[in-house]
Image 1 (cartoon, rainbow, N blue to C red):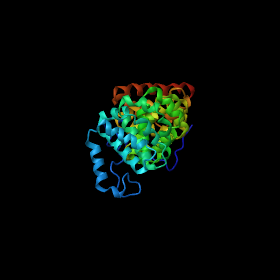
Image 2 (cartoon, rainbow, N blue to C red):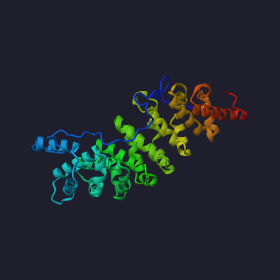
Image 3 (cartoon, one colour):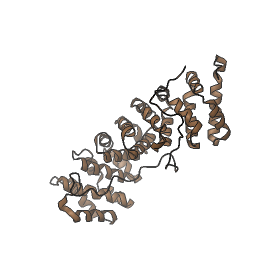
Image 4 (tube, one colour):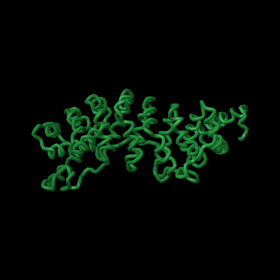
Length: 358
């Protein structure tokens, strides 16, 4: 059974290196990186031009100062007041967001003062910038382990998913990070998937900028610890963008995409999608030319694909996998050697069934 490669699908001759990402396949989402100080006087600025230096000074103070509980409560009151203007709510949300970003102790104090509920309410606000501040403040609060369950209990998951679909670019990226933080609680992963987070995360992986792709991949990797979410990811079309990233060393996403793909092929639906989307030649090429870590994860994915299917084993062998696997079994990491040897044995099994072409 031969596999054709689309003419526009380039992978041969690529060196699978993930430049700039040598500290580990995934790093946790940090606090917001979407720009603390907007352009004053712009339509989307959190302070109007009339606020001038005073507004900027307040924001600078918010970054550095250790605010009192009274001031925090005042900011929360500004969010909740029926008489508050959108402008005053923006300013209050921005200051809470910055306080939570720059001072770990403030994350606990802000949550304890009752800010979580009002900030979650901002996630559904029609003003895009106010929603963005709310999303980012929730992200920053979620960096504190003690706040995660409180944020989830306040009903944040559904509006975070909505912001992930329809928010500003910064809101979408920070919503992905916030959902990642919540997904680190085992009992929330399945519910985050049920609320529809997987398709917009796949869309972010496919079409956003470098930061959005990395945040989406990290969130997906965490969510795919749930079997149901693996199936949801396959149905959302995750395999194609993963393979595209794996085949593009300039993406800086080769390792991350390869690890997410391995999580996907742990289910039958993921294995079928990987084969249908011409993932086998990409993985074989990675075994041959990748970095040690890439070779190891690629051979693990190929083993999953081949483990229960003689047809898939034939495809992998036909792609020329045995020579690089033999080389890996002799010179790879300990885990890579073991998995390469196991895969070679799998590929040799069908010989008795008349597969004498290798």
